[in-house]
Length: 255
View (cartoon, rainbow, N blue to C red):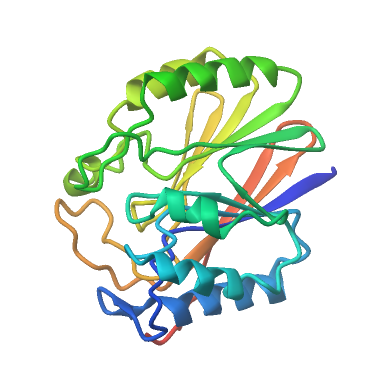
């Protein structure tokens, strides 16, 4: 059946210095390896989503990301993470092929991009806030005739990892209550956790993508770096509301 292909890359953690390292992994070469792998195996794609922590607290690195994505012709959807500077993203990505937050309608689907960096302490946790939750409720109602896929940075469900869960989405219960009111929501995707997850909550598919740099060890109470390679997620949004998805690992990648 016809479908839209969305490629999700997350937690790129770029620096202005191309040799910049995140916990033992040079983040730019690992991102480039993911992009090249996707270009060879999974194009054409209809949408590319980069779901937060685009940079490692370094606004100059947004230019590095723009250059890295220049070979992808599909529209690029961006949301900020806790290491991003949202005001700088707005300044750096005004071009038509980039969209920062908001809603993107394509075919039978609407992709809703949420900013979870509202009024947070800086420890790394996320929050939507009452106004954004109310706006989301209204937007999902407006989109009632379309299948909806929601992207955010912070996990709205437990990753079964104490350290990560303490830095998840603080108002997750309120967010999920909004989602539960709208049967047209088919899937939710996020990053932040540097590991993968795929489960169903009711009829909604819930998916975390691994980082394009390093991963954290699943179910470890701390923040222990795993030996898993860089990765990304391929998501096919089907016209009947179904979702086919797989995590792609760059097995054999040399850091």
